[in-house]
Length: 270
Ligand code: PEP
Ligand code: MN
Image 1 (cartoon, helix red, strand yellow):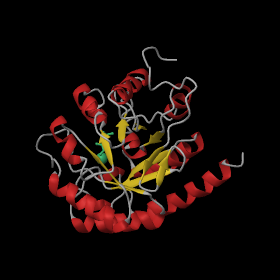
Image 2 (cartoon, rainbow, N blue to C red):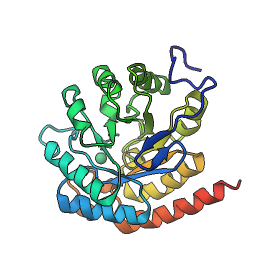
Image 3 (cartoon, protein in one colour):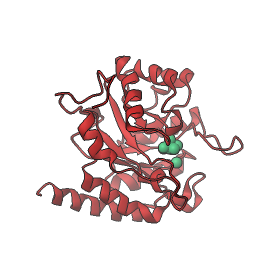
Image 4 (tube, helix red, strand yellow):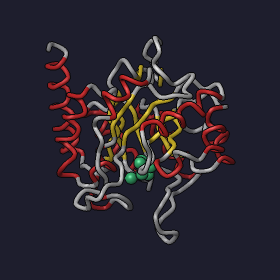
């Protein structure tokens, strides 16, 4: 048990199920796929069609990018959100995108189905309070230097403002290892089952930083009982403006989605 949690703790509560379009996160498996960054109409539409065909039920794409360097592409902003919304409607996929700034929360809600709080902003308490005041579900990534207790307290900030729809997303933490971009902590799945009623999904793209490692980590996340996955997929991964080393192409994503479906069927019977 973690002290101070009034709303996020499990304590006899039923598991939270969050309805996003036709997907009931916490019950159905949420397969969220799409590029790191929204780059163009064509890129989004071609990627969305491919991931939908392969079985994704939600589309991701960043319009505001928290880049390490101020000189790196910062995202298309409003133009990117318009593309994302339009492509989501055309393909019937609900959309997820990151919001970086408190002043953008209310208007970004008009374009997305789920607001993402990135790892770098997990403890931005003003931002958490702001997304807690709106009606959209929030995907809260684990900060790269954060404990489970700190993460759940951040979920508590959102719940405490009256928004009950928080989806936790493990995306790897910083360790001494340098081969992988982060160290993906899959124990987050059983730990969150013990501590909270909130759904937990896994992001092996940022968790590993390497496309070659993603299929194994996805299968492991499914086997661990995750409520879903968030994956970076681009119709031309080699041309992705950000995170191309961890981005899957349509064929790799489709092959992986088939394996995940088979594994999910299998584990339902054990
Ligand atoms: C992202 O999902 O695009 C992203 C920036 O992830 P994170 O906040 O986990 O680094
Ligand atoms: Mn990314």
